[in-house]
Length: 69
Length: 495
Image (cartoon, each protein chain N blue to C red):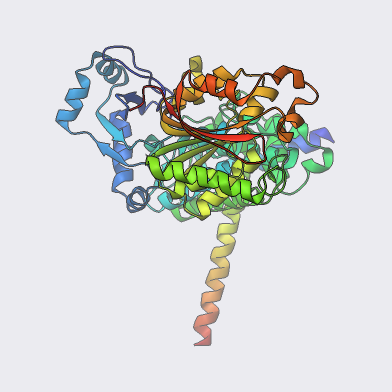
């Protein structure tokens, strides 16, 4: 059970990380924290998916508007 | 983050200068009662980008970001003639020196009511969101970037601004914002933890793991708590501490997507902060003092108000300290008479109410959660990064109110009368309005709880004799049929 949960968290984390290209260290000096940074990356992966969903729905809506003219 | 040496150290020419040290882009120091900042070339490029941006100009013009002037060649050279400043400038690799407007009375997060921490958080997030339009970001997200001008928060750390990489969808200070704003407010709201106890000993706030331990199993899965505390705790516990990849700068190929993600993060953080807004109308032991929990009749209270009004009208005092301000009735009188008021009370509930009223009525009152018998100490590195309350307060006021408060200091805290008056004479440069309450007063007796013998010798005559050690008595008034006297005192040696 514990292993399965670990795998779940691992794969979600990897997914989140894979959606970004990594480069150099940020120059901000504030401690980013660990849990907060992981949560931010996880949320970013979800919001990133929402971005494409919104794009698609916006495209459909504009199409519908055009055909109604 | 600005270590607020402002208001702390008096610096003599050539002596070592106490300056902030955490930010590699520059350092802040106080010199001859003025606030300066040495800035490195990198820091200057970021600062110029902020000052030239549309959002930056709006925020500075509205006074929500501290006004800042870049010193010209001559003025900078003049300052650099001081060997201590010159050494600091060389050590940090300075390129420029800027001067900031002086915020009248610096205060720190552990002295704020929860409402004030909330307002400082809102200011920080609104600033971060507005600057995003001009591709400028905040490097840190801590309440130490904010001071209060009266009841209004002002962002003071101009080196927090940086030119952003538009492809970066993350906000690195998010974790710090959670630790220093959201979790302390959550702990205050859910567990009743006073902010001073949380923030006085923790510069960087609360870790999610700490709050997680305080919560019940049910609490841990509640919405809001889950994303703020539980998920970060679970994620961190399963993450290898040696894996630094999550801290690498992130870049997306799609700039629109990067902006969308970052804006969503700032908006959702703002919604979370909104949910943690302290509620109005909370009660505490002292919150109903003015309405019912006192022994004044309306005539007595009117006489007391008249006494204070007359003193304010005659004096033209500009800076007032109201000790034990309670609901801020007399602070408001002083503010309406044109004074800038610092109102202190150890009860965060009444300080919060004073802040609400001052903000709603645009009164120049800065309420702080401070107990004068246990004033805020100097904190941070060497206890000198953020000055103690008394170091900031001594000689800053030309009028001090001690109304219906000294019996608490005498009885509850057991501070000798002469010491109270001596401290008052250090706080005010001119006037003191003080209310003497004799030991047979019902409120006094409520505090003594049977220890009447301790104060049996305290009479108006003894009180006046003690006052004369440090003050001249300008006038006094006995509130008829009570055991209370009002005094207007003038500090000895005041012009």
